[in-house]
Amino acid sequence: MVKEFYSMKNRCSPEALLSIILGMSKEQKESVRSMGFGALLKMKIMDIPLKLGFYVLQKFDYERMVIDIEGKELKVTAESVHDMLGIPIGGTKLTQLDQWPKDDTSYDEWKQQFKKDSII
Image (cartoon, rainbow, N blue to C red; front, side):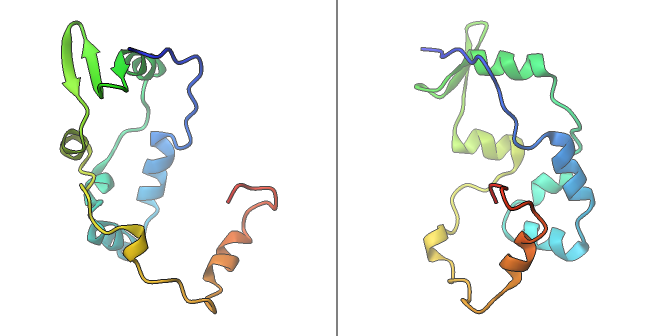
């Protein structure tokens, strides 16, 4: 069963992601690579046509995890997403990471750049 989407919100446009990538230092890019997301650094997409986004969403059956295009089905799996975007499959669970030191103030300093009512 395909659900209809009446509105589509985009939290991060391809252009914004590309801008972030281009502004990264060598060290930051190496950190991204070491986490297994190096393929994202190669993205050069500036825009996704709105009609294409709506078309894919209309054709996506989330219960069966397939995109049905003119009777042909494209299965959406962890492997297919990995093959297309280079996003790693699996890896370290967040609960396995070391705890952030309680006396580290870098998060508080980073957060000060945003408005008080920000969701961050």
